[in-house]
Image (cartoon, rainbow, N blue to C red; front, side, top):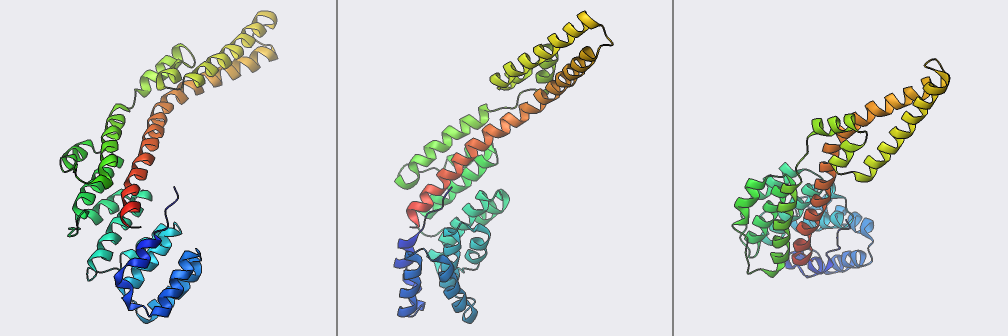
Length: 281
């Protein structure tokens, strides 16, 4: 997922008055030209003189955010103090999303739970993001409790709220099937366990391979006996494939659930990001 370049907000924010006009113009030029590495050099030089400057830390965090270097983005966004409420609150949302994107769901949730928004529509956005994090954790009870606070008056998050309800249903339906049953079915008929797990094509392929190996083993036994090279080779291959297919069928049940969950989670992350892209550009 490509993170957007949030230039308009960077240029228009009044907090950057701490820059001298020439420096601000130069940094704006570098960002407009997507010369982010040069912008980082300028900002780091300024931070060496004023390490606690909130606007500098925020802007550097945003540059790293545009570069998709999320650990560095969070490093600088976390240094923005509440002395500048707008920058601070936007930094909280961006760093929480970054953590979620990196799979650090607990860290993403903690950042939001400890944050009390004071600027509209941030209270709605907080509940929205926490609901998305609950879905990413497959915590349906928490999602249902947060859904009660969804708003119908804010168009920025309205569509994504509706999508979250769809994802909740999809995730709940994506229950893991029984590995024991999958293995037992493949023991009965090779490939049947994979069909049960949801991999019909793989199941049919397994049945064909097992049938071919078994037929060759039987033909070797019928023509040359149990001591023939042909029988020993194909019966060994059949046995190895047969046992491996049973084990693979049992494992595939969990793998398929995880694959489906991951696909839905990617959509959730995309919908989490859309309001941030809209509000903080």
